[in-house]
Length: 142
Image 1: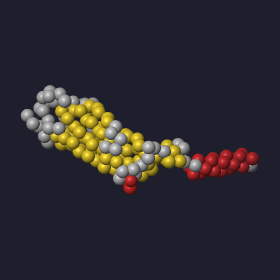
Image 2: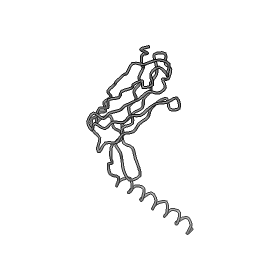
Image 3: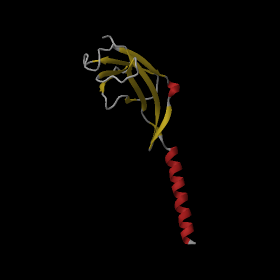
Image 4: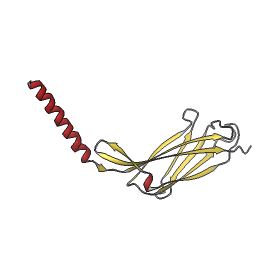
């Protein structure tokens, strides 16, 4: 009988602890996840491209290359708090004709508005979280 009460007591204590833990969470920094893909007009992946993502408000720039190993890109950016923001994404061919031709540079702007954020739990903190996907289809110049 003591075992049953001990088990019930532990279960109740754990339930109360988890309830209090959840109610004490504070709002943390905001996270924005940007995912994308780049192909040619035939739907084929293009190797050795430089992708630059700039936060229009903070002017922070993230530049990286895509390769045959990681054909799509998936980046996470943090902001102090959730709010409206724009990201300028530029894709450019940097290896000349080695990837099957020279492709025309392309730029797109994606916007995240305040109402697009959901929440993401991270232990003691709830983070505002938004996700965007963008696709680029590059035209071959020659």
